[in-house]
Amino acid sequence: MLREVLAGVVAIVSKEAVQHQGITLTMEGIVNLQLSSKSVGVFEAFYNSVKPIQLITSNIEVVKQGKVPGGKTEIPFEFPLHTKGNKVLYETYHGVFVNIQYTLRCDMKRSLLAKDLSKTCEFMVHCLPQKAKLQPTPVDFTITPETLQNVRERSLLPKFLIRGHLDATNCVITKPLTGELVVESSDVAIKSIELQLVRVETCGCAEGYARDATEIQNIQIAEGDVCHSLPIPIYMVFPRLFTCPTLETINFKVEFEVNVVIVLHDEHLITENFPLKLCRA
Image (cartoon, rainbow, N blue to C red):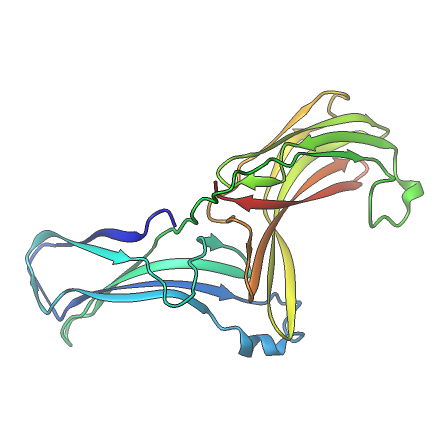
């Protein structure tokens, strides 16, 4: 984590004095896992083996029973972000089947005749930057009918030659994914060229694992029948909440991939897949 302390103020705004039975703050960090609909039933043991994983929890009384004066009152607080035992605080991440979330809830207890007040907000946790210097791993690629996989009728494919490179596949999460793509030749006009960022989430236990890939974002980098032999820049920023450093634990994994997708006018879809390793530096 970049900060070892969560600090702030509880702000209470009221027109007149408020009687209360105490004000408390509860901090919680939880990993929620769930199976996709296609995996339900296949891993029935999953439901018993993997419950929400609590990473951190803490509770403090900010103000004892009493009265808050009218107007605006600010009460400072500070939480040390210390985990119990060998627990690790993973980076905040909002996925489809894996969700890592840290929340702070403020509760004001009131008398029986008045309703209790509660407010929850989310706070972000970042991992510490890795100490080792990251060496870029550029990848060159060539896409032709012969290089494609999972093709039924290869002889029916139009002829094309697409070359390019990614500057790195081990990426710093705060920096964009960059590279270049060149359409050398194509018998069929190109309709669109897109970059698709994919999350690959794996959940499971000793009885089995469910692995699901879902799209995070899709960016069009070229539209229409682009000029041949013209370099097209590849540029994609990693969205903050929906990506995190590549993560592997006993119960779950969060990995990322990027697809270069070329759509032809005859509706053929050409896809080249690149696994990515994200880190914080």
